[in-house]
Length: 133
Image: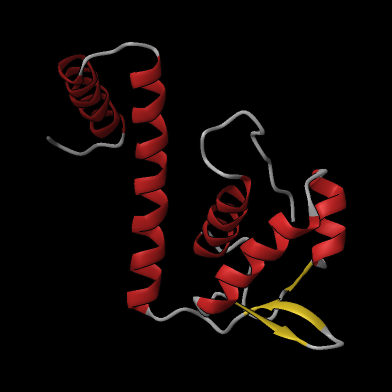
């Protein structure tokens, strides 16, 4: 499992971990029953505090995304149903958009500039994929 942390992002590191695990599950890169690294191992790999990874795992466990079996490890929970998958995909898309909007705001773009650029890029993307606007 390869996660990338942006230490200077305004998104907390534990949220970055959660979002990436959810995205990997939604994309099929992690499947039900796959074992995740231990909290200690992931913290060492990412060079972050143990408690940061523990919080991400705790939130994922609370949401039923992963399950921890004492003495055996942490695993991807059973296959999400269609409603959960839809919610995971929507959460990931919203996260992508929030991140882009935050970056645009930080760089001084106005809402009108962002909206115009978004519509241009969406039209281009649809055209490339053989879809109409």
